[in-house]
Image 1 (spheres, rainbow, N blue to C red):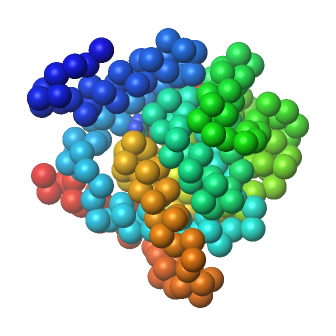
Image 2: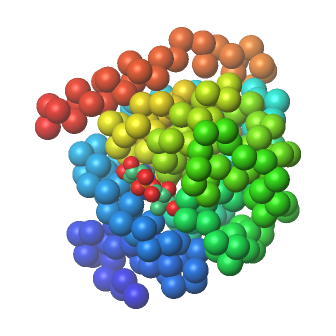
Amino acid sequence: MIRSRDHPRYESLKIREKLVNGFKAGIVCAEGLIAHGRGEAFDYLVGEKTIELAMESTRVAVATLSLAEHPVISVNGNTAALVPDEIVHLSNATNALLEVNLFHRTEERMDKIIDHLKMHGAANVLGKDANARIPNISHERAKMDKEGIYKADVVLVPLEDGDRCEALVNMGKTVIVVDLNPLSRTAQAASITIVDNVIRAIPNMARLADELAKSPKTELERICASYDNKKILEKIIRRIKMI
Ligand code: PTJ
């Protein structure tokens, strides 16, 4: 247990502890711990804070989810362990369905993550049925629910792998990702990339969803109108290079 709040890396240690506890509980996979390490390295490069460019993408992402006809939030092990309350909050605030979708899929992990989200207030979580598949993807993340990701017009996928992101875009969906690595295939292939830590991005999205809940459709459309994902990524990469 991390007790010393005055430790300079207290916040970071607390996040690691959450993931390790998630691993011990069978929610996070071992590979998820490694993936987090890569995320941490990139978090250093953006100053371990939400930069203005990420906030711009976050705002557009929330407006896009709110405008969607059939929005779905895809949840993996790391996201479920790090931000369960906020992901449920965001799903309620944007009327987005929750679907568990795992790269390292086992039925045991699926059950544990679904139960975990329900314990944090989710009324319904899809993913177990896996009665559809994403074309041209051979691994387990191809499995999806006909009423969930398959039918979605907008999908939020925090911590995605590049293959599936590209495949979902090819299916005609608007794909929102959270990825601290602006160079990753996921970040580059997505429709909207939030270059931020899920630990900050999902709470920011939940708060903004509440703020925008009463906004008229025209205002949400205005927020999305001139968004250019490639430009945002270029600016973030330039910012990192200048360190
Ligand atoms: O729970 P599962 O079975 O679906 O497996 C989940 C992992 C994360 C293991 C799986 O999706 C995976 O292998 O992911 P990758 O391909 O390693 O990609 C993870 C990406 O997320 C990398 O680009 C990391 O930089 C980034 N990342 C890691 N932790 C965070 C992050 N981005 C934002 N916030 C984080 N906390």
